[in-house]
Length: 127
Image (cartoon, rainbow, N blue to C red; front, side, top):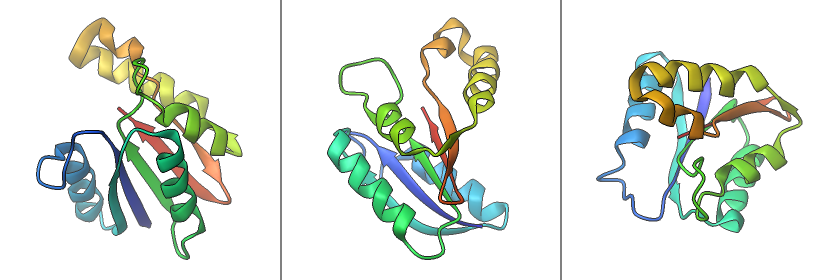
């Protein structure tokens, strides 16, 4: 699959974006292609613009977002992603929180991880 990776953060850079680096490595090791990688500020308009660009890019099969899924006033990725989905995979968020609970305890319930499909492209948004 050809995958775009988007990190949503006001502070990360390519040098310290461990989540973005991990996602890219995991995709590559699994035999997928990272077709795009970017970091966007946690601003709904910026996230929407980048997500739309990746959706419209020829050959994108999946888009993986990291960050912006919490409950702080600055966390806007969930609303943008959810608004772009044609079909939501509700079980993804539930499973993500369940698996996270084993690692981080009750704080896992504060994640708004979500996933779905738009125009045949899988979109996954994770903390």
